[in-house]
Amino acid sequence: MKYIKVTNEINGSDFTFLDNGDDTIIEKLEGFEYPSVKSVVEDIPSTFGAVYVTSSFGRRRFSWAGDFVGNNPHSVRRNFGRVARQDGNLKLIEFETYDGLKLRCYADIVSILNPYTNALHRYLIEVVAPDCRFYSQEEIEVDIPYEDIYGGFDVVTNLGNELTHPVFTIHGPGNYFTIENTITGESFVIDFNLEGNGEIIIDTLNRTVTKDGVSIFAYFTGSFFGLEPDVNTISFDVGSGADVTTSLKVTYRYAYSSL
Image 1: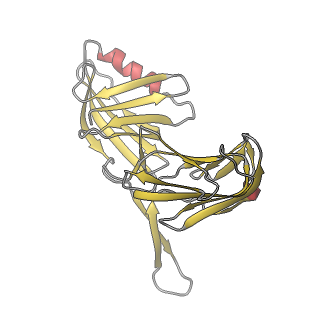
Image 2: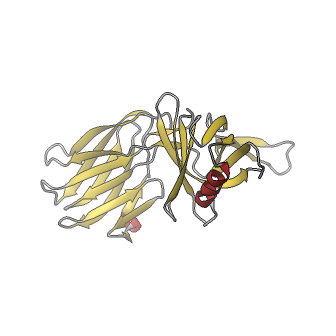
Image 3: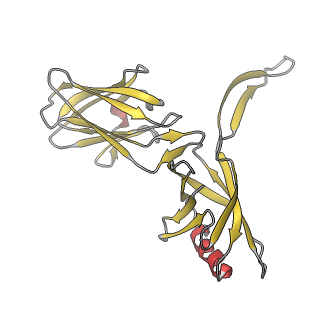
């Protein structure tokens, strides 16, 4: 890695590990190449053995190791300790690969091995991310205006190699909204009368549907679908009440399971 940056968003502190930088050296990386897979196996009563049902990605465990160096490595290791302190919240971890891919994830720092010595300061940082995917640091936005005759339609591209879950924002007015990924055939409907400049936000990762911060999940039917790797086409239809200001915004990041 060119760098690995850890940010504690609670106290606003951050620390950057550089590959052969002034204060740090990165020597060993593990778990960045592919997340672990958990097999789901069912034991059937009155039978010998078990039946394999399915498998899925589990949490991602990864780590990096190296040295704290510089004129005052003791101060460097204490600076990282301030960022890594336990406060009950996940840390933002951002990094850049050798071929220039800038990625990020949220993870819990579960172990810091950094023996106190008066010589070279070795370290090993181990983290666990509840979401197995790495995401692009860049956030992508695609605006799809609604047209009275053709509805709304646009190409949305996921340059990663894994499914990513977008946030859809419907800008009113209008009633009875249908959003579909025409590549996969997955869709959802929101049977709600949205007046004026109101907005409905559909978070497909966290499976929430809100207007002005209040849940309107009861008006939602369908699938909280994601964006497959490569090209997706999103269609946007309004049953009635739309005008020239009615639109759909798709916000997402590219997702990667392996580097």
